[in-house]
Length: 298
Image 1 (cartoon, one colour):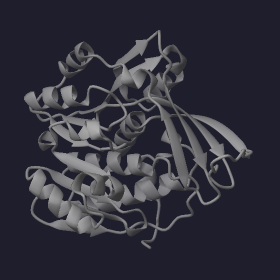
Image 2 (cartoon, helix red, strand yellow):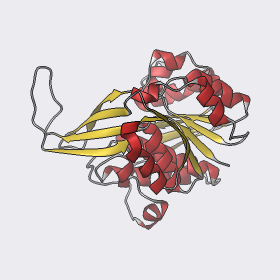
Image 3 (cartoon, helix red, strand yellow):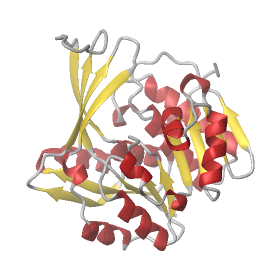
Image 4 (cartoon, helix red, strand yellow):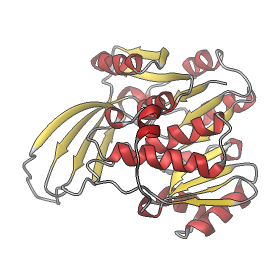
């Protein structure tokens, strides 16, 4: 089975600040770094570093050549990444404060210019049983979900960022929801994670649900029971890729047939290592690193 990540590829500009800029404030940055990013690219690299056979689909501008290089260096197959010569690549302005927390401004760029013909071209190379991993930083989400479902692909959705357009898609076709508690609350209408999982199960009875809870770890409902796992203790430097790392390692665990708590433990440890490093894709650990690193649960 293959994983197709159809998603965003961004140029991330990361500013290190004492605190997030306030309305009307001019704030000096202590440092600036340029990194590859986009939830699609990050999750593709996370899936690959976790051990999966991974293909990336999306679109960049001529300014995004180094993004292709990053994917190729990680051994992600890039034949389905299109180049738009008339638009800038997507990019993100990321503020990272002294506590390692971040806030992000996104510009969609080429991520928002995907055509139905391009979707058809990509999906022609995949078959029933392959996993399609989606986020919500590209256009044509409804078309991609419908066409992948028709082919019998398993659809994993990280509904980030949440918006009304995503809710117009037929989310009953999603096999795995992988989301944080804010996204779960936006779909389910409840801020209580257990209630949100209950509501999501009622709305999408054939879907499996993963909710990450920040410092409280994660919960996973596999259709029969709910599992919970904590987080591992590290000093946070940059949380940008935490969720993407968790997603990649979680899906690889599914493909490897691991038990639920084993999957959650591996994903939590990989995420902990990622937040202890600066950057997005650059911070994601390999499976060997995860296996060799000893961490304690909080």
